[in-house]
Amino acid sequence: MEPRRTIRTYLLLVALGLALWVAMGYYDTAEAADWPNWRGPNHNGVSNETGWSATWPKDGPKLLWKKSIGTGFCSIAVSNGRAYTMGNINDNDILYCFEADTGKQIWKKSYPCPLFKKNHEGGPAATPTVSGDSIYTFSKNGDAVCFKAATGEILWHKNLPKELGVKHPNWYFAGSPFVAGDIVIYNAGSAGIALNKADGSLVWKSGTTAPGYATAVPFTMGNQKCVAIFGFREIVGLIAATGRQMWQFPWKTRWDANIGDPIISGNTVFVCTGYNRGCALLKIEGSNVTEVWQNKNMRNHFNSSVLWQGHIYGFDDAKELRCLDFKTGQMVWSKGGLGKGSLMIADGKLIILSERGKLVTAPASPAGFRELSSAQILTGKCWTVPVLANGRIYARNAVGDLVCVDVGG
Image (cartoon, rainbow, N blue to C red; front, side, top):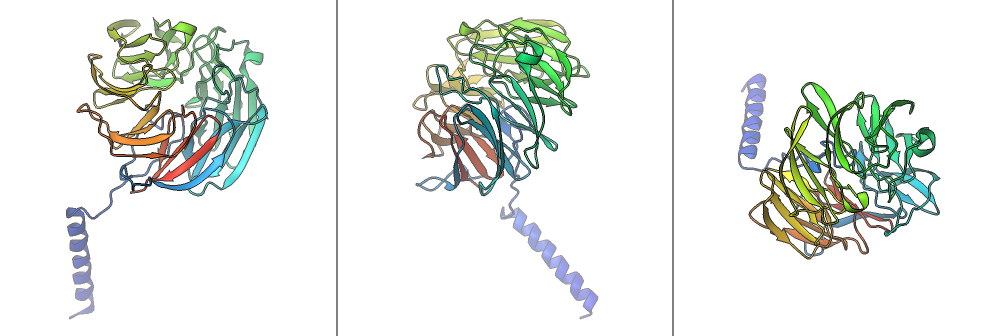
């Protein structure tokens, strides 16, 4: 046989073999995904990652690494092979940079910040935001800080109460930085503050009253890029670039504790808070906001719900995991025994961390709760949402135990 014909025949056989491999389901189409900021790249608690394993051996997923990072409730941001999170030790907030797969510390950087222990352990509550070559953080004391991702060098540091006169909320600042183009938006002041992300200079600000605790959530209205911000006693829609208010809806909660992020779908907004306040679906038409429904079937205390395929999944004040129909607000099912936990969704599955450190997976389905796997990965109080990124789940507790477990498919 001629050499060229032999090569063509070989390549044809290889191609046929690969096609057969894919057809029989042997080809791995898993997709990994970073999680560079609070609630993930889509800002909604849903990961695009597929191919991770939601079922584990009896002893649970393999522990890859564990660290002690100090007191706090800050979640984890994962980007470009690095994991970033924060804790407080001796009245200093510390930003850590770890190798995402090994836990090796690359650098850490600190600045003074009181613990602010009030009805809970205290420590940072906002999650770092990775954008380009920079990392943005926000302390309970209102420190807006920009770090160089490669080294941890502080590029700029602004204390918003001191420099802009905004008031602390009752439990101090908690919303994570939200990057929109060339600005960073913080839930501070009456309805947000925006700083230039390069140098920290002021771009726009609202009033100086105390804010809510949620993070700004992006949406598009017409051709305008906008954000929804949960304020002290209302939810407000703003043009991101200018801060101009487009609409607002009053939402008064006991202790003015508007904590869970709004969920935006099309021209509707789901709002939900605890202290027996409840939830509502709002319809936005220009500057007009109308109520579609309101009830107490979901009362998020300090963790946000997640929308998936027409249903809301979240933890109610009654220490129940609940599923609600998004359009009607009717409760579809509830599940106790997990305390006031937290969750995210990936590949159609709930990733749940119970209030006492049990990691649980289950289908995100209105058909009912069905556990796929569970494992005790932490002890103590766990109020911080777990994070899936690139086949690994990161989770922490209030005293600062941070773990990374392997769920690679």
